[in-house]
Amino acid sequence: MGKFSDYWKHVAGAPAATPAPFAVRLSPGDVEATSPPALRSDDVRRRVESYGLSHVGAVRPGNEDHFIIASLQRSLEVRQTNLEDRGLLEPLCGPKAYLFAVADGVGGQEGGRLASGITLRTIVEYLSETVGSYHAVPAGREQAFLDPLRQAVQRAHERLLGTFGASQGGPATTLTIALLVWPQVFLVHIGDSRAYHFRAGALRRLTRDQTMGAYLVDQAAMSEQQAEQAGYNDVLSSAVGAPDMTPVVSAVTLERGDLLLLCTDGLTKHISEDRIAAVLARGTNAEVDCRELIELALADGARDNVTVVVSRALPA
Image (cartoon, rainbow, N blue to C red; front, side):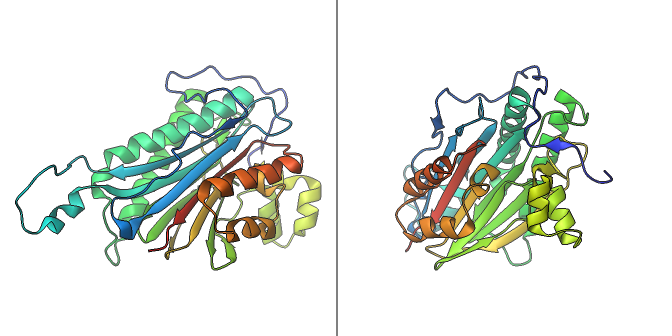
């Protein structure tokens, strides 16, 4: 198969992996809302509202998806001072960045769940060690933010390889990360979990699926419909923990009122981009958006786990 790995998104009968001591386990239940309802900066100019939901779907016996929403901040907190210009201390206080990520495990129910959980935990561990550098994005310094994201992904990749090995069809995961350092969002993408940017009624996909189907379409070897019918859209060409992993990095600049959506393919297999845009255009709030998107996927059969994270840059 050349550059392609045999990573079918759901391998029937794949052996369960031995749980790792640092594996992340979700609480039982059909819907896990493991993020707080909102993350807001103390600085009104940087207000962000975020929410995430993950659902097992209508068919799968377990949930292999994980997501995380986090604020990154320095530890210094000013309690009292007689300094006249308190603004000088602002760079040392409060949230400096927001982290959003989704991961869809592959390689069997237990192995896939462990792979996605281990990956997100490793990402958080690494970024928390470098949080002091997240404050602003000087012109021409974007690489200083992309490099830590690449390094975090590489650490997660190596941890999965060390835990499960690099065998074909073993536990691995998709991964889509968004690091928001207002007003810029830095993205790292592996696999087919997507990121979208919504502004003024228009939805724009920020990622390209890393699947055999997408590759064949890009090479004009077949149409999108042919790739879908042949099942090639379910074969990953890149995944964290797989023999082939090719992170793609990018950046986008937000404006007040913009939305950022991260989701696993359990959403996009069932809901068209036009329907997603219609939900986001209602302008309610992040939690309502998440719940409505998942309900739409469930109404369409939800053959896969469904995970969505919505982040709104609140109007000034």
